[in-house]
Length: 118
Image 1 (cartoon, rainbow, N blue to C red):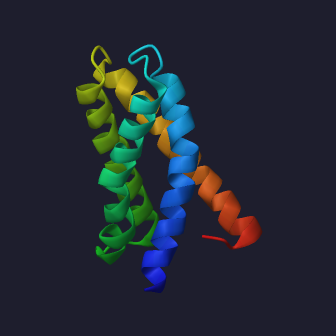
Image 2: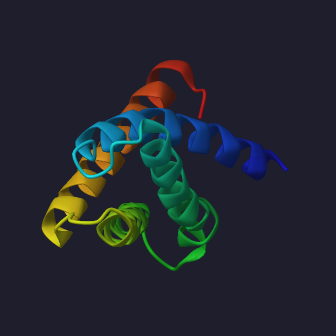
């Protein structure tokens, strides 16, 4: 149960960081702020459980696991953005995903280092 609570905290932190970043970056592709926010939320929901519950079980070193998990999140969310936001080129979708995921990953490391929260 502690792992599920830790995941929920990490997921909350993830969406609090990624929704504003990706929603802002996608503002020209969809006028509805709420629709952008919901779609970014679902993109994170599609990848985050695997990052927490599947990738740590793979026979990888910690750095390899982090690289694989974060690459998974960036690629899948980028593909999602390219499909659900009309007119978003794949490379731009990938860049938005990389920016959002990199920001939440970095912020999560800072929060953990300074508060131990996640």
